[in-house]
Image (cartoon, rainbow, N blue to C red; front, top):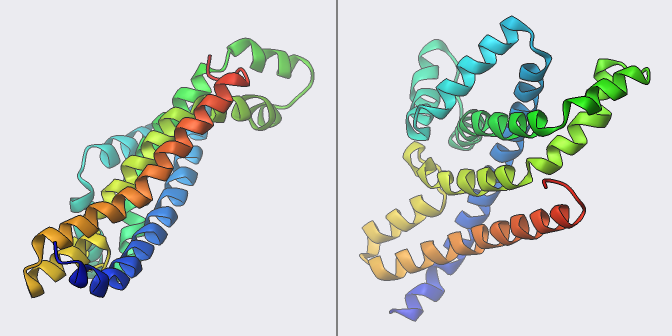
Length: 219
């Protein structure tokens, strides 16, 4: 192990790790918003919205992120829609993640006892108020395990961003291997960087789930 080389390129990996974390976080936040909106659309049982949402979920979950990125980065410019690598990564991750987040939130909404919705409506709350103040808070708590699993999964999926020339961790590792043939050191830094990003997320998910279980949610 060439520690002098590791010390030399460590700032490059730090910069790449920050780009990976920033892009992944933005994509995950957008995916969560998309998932929440789609889950709400499924809950309201509007036929057209349900069909469109179901089609989107199937499309996003059954096509690889790499194919989606290629379509956004190389396909959309053919019709005049151009993106930079970072925007492409965020949109692609949001498109993929939105489908998974939809299923996570949908299962949480469906797990809330129907009697609670009926009771809220009988007390004079509108359907919108019932959804926002009664159903949704409980559904979000129930969805935490699936949500955090999706967060970790999506953050790992950022490793394919290098395919659209985004200078993330994977791109940096491949670039350094190609330039200096320091394969062991480059892979060591790559694995270490991903562990520093993903391990805290996993621990946070476990802690959050336990807190909610002790509070009486998700049982």
